[in-house]
Length: 136
Image (cartoon, rainbow, N blue to C red):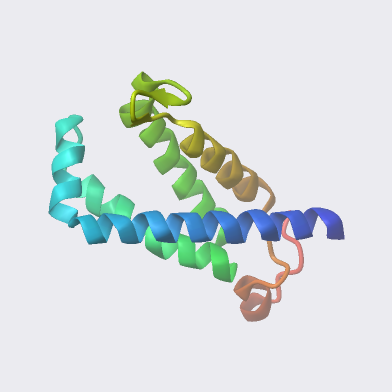
């Protein structure tokens, strides 16, 4: 991957990572039992709330550090697709009357899909630990 594309991937990786960490921490602060109750109200098993919270925090940290970027991005893309379909789609793109739409989840889905496809190894732990320069 050319240098300019790698630099843009770093920006996406770090911003997505920070966003996921903050959203994951927020789920812990709300109380995972409350989040599980919300997931249950949508017909989802409660354990998915715990999975999503941990994926957001651990996956977000991994993205920031550049560790397993493709794998964590793919998992988070699935989480974002699920969030759009199960929770956000009825509200519309921008939401309305105080309800949040799916615009953030769609942007994060696009970012994580991009990272899952291209990876990002510049200034990454993958590069340091495994000597990965640019995995195609």
